[in-house]
Image (spheres, rainbow, N blue to C red):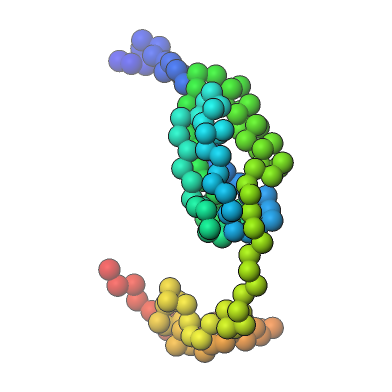
Length: 150
């Protein structure tokens, strides 16, 4: 019935979830992120920070290392894109005030003693730590694959 009436969805507003990025260098966040400056942009309705003052801020390389998330909603696509461009300009100009991280203690640089807690017991049992890279990978023979328990 809807198809016979030539029903069309009317787009009222554009919406974006935009990540705040740290283009580098890494460091400790020394001053709060200027959230009010970001919120002053017309399309921005919310800003969520993922790094607080005193926390380590790595260079953004994936979603896990974004500095925060901005929610944008506005009637025109051009305004949303202009606001994203303005945020990227601020980030490139040094939007975040960072301190250099203190050198790590020698113990912190040592390789881990044991497998990762997220490592499966079957994999850990067949691969002693520390892992040694070999030019020829080894695989479990057919029939020795573990069962998935639900």
